[in-house]
Length: 550
Image 1 (cartoon, rainbow, N blue to C red):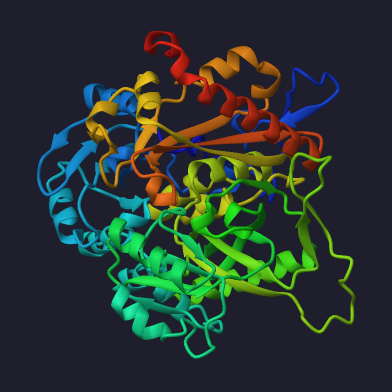
Image 2 (cartoon, rainbow, N blue to C red):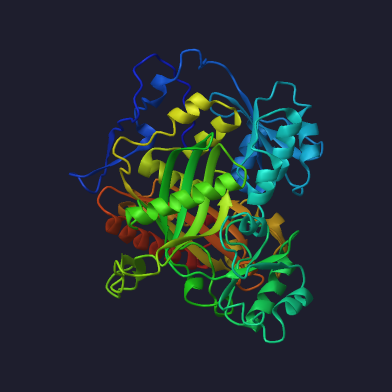
């Protein structure tokens, strides 16, 4: 369910090969061009795994997920066909997946429920070999449960640091600048003083974010003391912040994601992904600016030297937090980079290019500013993009890590022979949708998420079925675009979590766009996809509910 390409338990004695050769998948619109389809690839990486690793042995794995991670249809299928529902402490949904027995636990409680989690897990009638979660909300609880059950975990301390943005800054090994945290508006006023600048130590703009959160939920940019106070008020109203609201410097420079695979402190695989400018890079949250991702691209267009600096800085930060093995999704900026994004009115996307003022004698050398470390696989969209680019499946690796299957973990960390093979972008669509529009879209299970006529219940997250409008309609009407989009995922959240209008929904869709040609071609297809998708979504109320469902 959660893994796009489950690991195949194959084991044969062959000479060890450090890369694997993927087949070519024909692109229907470009008869002379092909792009690599990793799902169909003949995978030789497991041929070198020792013969004493039994490929037929069944492993039992608990996967802890929030119920809202699954669409209404997915929940129904799991509940009716393959599950045993338990009622102790959490609601658990045990389901079969792939060739192994996977246990999907619906965790709906707070982060400190590790003891309740492991107590319920002990009631499962079969032996349990591993436990993991992809949700930041449950990483600490799952670590507690793993320790109590004697299963593999990097440890509670490491996850406690990585899931808290204030602790992450304190344990980053970097200059923390003017970073501080507050738990109330009164504490903020005392911290920044009457002038609002901490006696000149605080330089605007600044970034405000909850100490604990996921994605860009509740992350705001403030350009002056008044906006800072407003941002802190909004965050405290919508999030539980055990360590308060974190206020830190806004840093200019290209933003990047760095995905790392480590085993005993050794770097097995790493990649740098370009994160394109978001609206908060040019305007404050009071003016509508948000830190929602607009689009990403791999391979990165930054110089190799800067990419190497990113990887090394993120590796050291991960080790400093106490991790030694696993998959890590890190976010950072390259300060004083030799490149930056420029807007060309003739090009439908920002262009990353070398700065004209950059010279070898520039005294301001590039440096890496850590945003956060997510000690888990990237989200499904980002993981799928990396899978099509490099052939490395982070979700499969996370499963193998939880099971301590280190031989296969190392084997499947090997990328394509000529990695990166494809040019892959993420197209991120974020549109505010009214309550009337949501009703017209006829989303199964939607009624239970609406608190009143004013809009969504607080802290609501809806996973949308993959064939729901407008994606199904887009596949029928624009096949020349959608043949480049092998995967997409859609969720809806309350808009006010992202500085939007209270009472409306923010509709998020992430599409993986694959091109065999070039970075420019992939990004052009991203523009076509987002424009067409938004047009259809805005037209939704014009049709009846039955018309909108495929």
